[in-house]
Length: 175
Image 1 (spheres, rainbow, N blue to C red):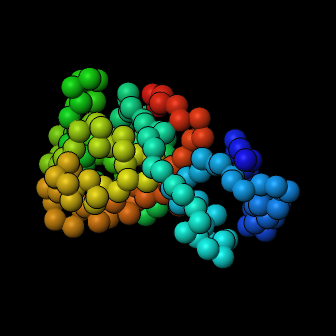
Image 2: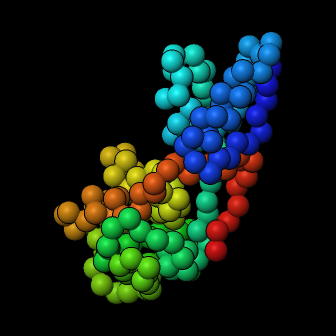
């Protein structure tokens, strides 16, 4: 068995070459690797079903300062929304936050304006990393759309290019 702790490559070609090397190690019948949910590896294989995978919890974020955290990230599309956040653990986060994002310019501050979306800090933390979408959370009743049409826009804005992943599986507060 070959156990891969971490694999990093600067290009698609290098990524494929590393996997070819690992698969070609003499007398190897099994490679163990903990990768992201959207790992490209299955698409390199002639038989993608040869991979045996198990989903495990590895990354969790607790937003301690909502305004600072939301200002510190970038968004996939321009955004101007008001989030109504409930946070019983960090009560200073409870309230409405106006989030404006246009390219590199991002601001988030408390407001008294009517809310567009309602959620708890747990749902906001789940969407913050760009994997779990606000639309998915809304489908389960965990996010409420208060202004029609806001949910698809906000969901797209929070979405990341890749699924969030951390190989060590640590949980840590952000901001």
